[in-house]
Image 1 (cartoon, helix red, strand yellow):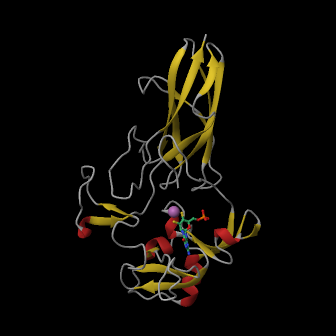
Image 2 (image 1 turned 180 degrees about the vertical axis):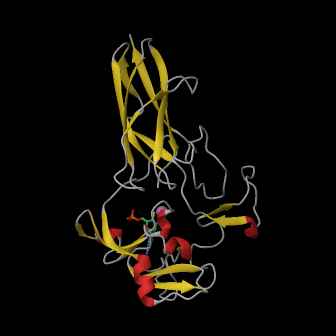
Image 3 (image 1 turned 180 degrees about the horizontal axis):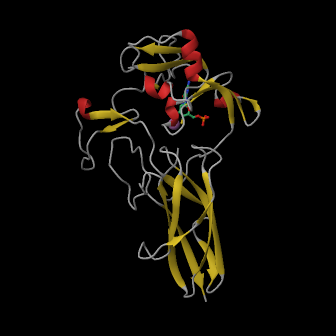
Length: 264
Ligand SMILES: Nc1nc2c(c(=O)[nH]1)N[C@H]1C(S)=C(S)[C@@H](COP(=O)(O)O)O[C@H]1N2
Ligand SMILES: [Mo]
């Protein structure tokens, strides 16, 4: 998950080892009536009531049968750490992290859209059409978030960096998209009036993040912002502002920006 322009949540990109969920499902046999693959997990609801789930989400059967959807037991060459779902978890790349169930007990193939904990209301759901901020949206007009949008971060330097005029400033970061590859990475130091292309590295695989680097030279002293904008292979790019208001603030892929002070 990532935060707004000024603060960051945790973002990572690990190497996973496991088996395709579709191979396990094929072995078990999936009926024609299958609509959704739901997960059930060992972690307890905050109330400690064993009848309740902390979370029980899932993905449509098409995504469950996608060759990139995995049941994994190892991360970065080690058994899954407890916090990341030991002994077995789902990895549904490109989709909300909450679909990647941890501490798995059971995969439940359903003949309807799963209605477990955190599948309904405003949990991981957004209005199916754009609404004004604060709008009360009828339940039937909310839809489940599926593929995640294109996003990038400036990881170095941090906001507030100071640099002498005429000296080069090295920047770097990461970019990714639920749709697959990022094909363009651009930076602006003048509030979007002009853009320069960053050096973007190819991904290790379809859903891995991509590193980028760029060097800017600001020749006049003053206060600047550097904005970073990724474009994925579908042509979609990050918006400048927080897009599509929704009750929980999901899918904020607005450009990351940092303040840069240039001194004489
Ligand atoms: N059983 C279970 N699975 C879960 C969760 C949880 O609370 N319980 N959290 C989900 C959410 S919201 C996210 S973002 C990811 C986080 O996975 P990570 O710990 O590997 O980053 O796990 C998902 N799987
Ligand atoms: Mo999450």
